[in-house]
Image 1 (cartoon, rainbow, N blue to C red):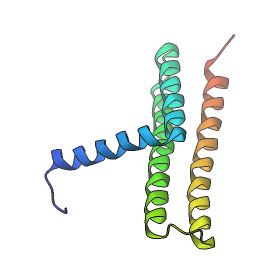
Image 2: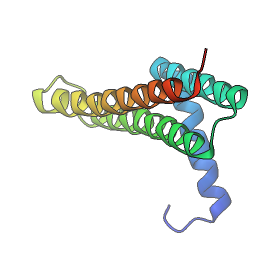
Image 3: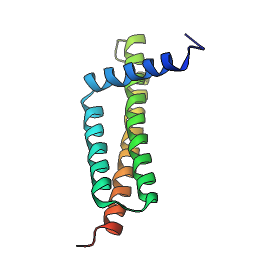
Image 4: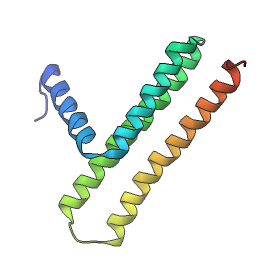
Length: 118
């Protein structure tokens, strides 16, 4: 499957995202949160640096969720039995999503503090 044309590779990527959105409630929740952040950005119209920071954070969280899903699926396929090493790998991937999510929340709080005069 290497060296496919660009459109075909984009199709594979879109299929992966769509399948993950259908099967993973955590990805749907993160996508909803990202849409909320985007709505606040459109509403408040902050400086471009806030757009860059918040969109990058949202993208990183969504990408981590997708990577977590890919890892879980691959490990479950390769080793359907419970195994401590597989469990630890899955827990670490989930931890990476959590760390990025907390970072994104922190960035959003900083945005609110800087751009939300009441």
